[in-house]
Image (cartoon, rainbow, N blue to C red):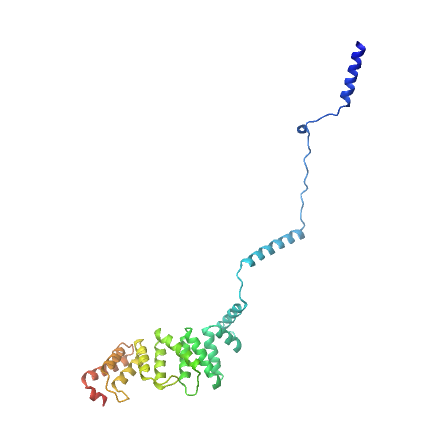
Length: 270
């Protein structure tokens, strides 16, 4: 019996020693992973910085509105002109044709300064452009050329000059209205029209031009076409002269008003 017990005990011990040792997963100890820190060289840092800056620049350019090269060129030409830098005739004309009033005036003056009569009609065109675009000082030379018997203008050039003067006259520029009145009076470059001449003289007088008021008064009191004295028109013109800031014009208006009140129309016309 003892021998049998010893045999069983020996078998159990052998079986136990042969079985593998089982370890619970949660009891297993895993050593920490060591991560090595990577240090970039100066060249690598510079390359990454350059790449980042390039990406930022590309993003800015993508959102920035595109500048028209023609517009950019015209702006450059305008800046050079304002800075009194020399522009070629071609550059000045290009700038004028783009709608630059100051360039139109300078180009017209350059054409006129050539002394060639053949380019004077073109000068009128560019003076008209400058005047229409608000450069009032350009209309003085334009009016002189339009009235000149030595300058022959096309219908288009006449229209552009007239349009500029009408715009300025209606905005209250007496010289423009007076220019129109003179042109209609002499019949150059427009057909002669006494009524139109008087209309624009009145426009100039109402805008404060004492000379225009004086012309109206003289035309009404001493008509050249044999028509009778227009008392109402004469008085209206003389009252406009009284509002002048020129003492000589005021004194003349007072004298003519007194004469108008004291004299019959028949005596005045004689």
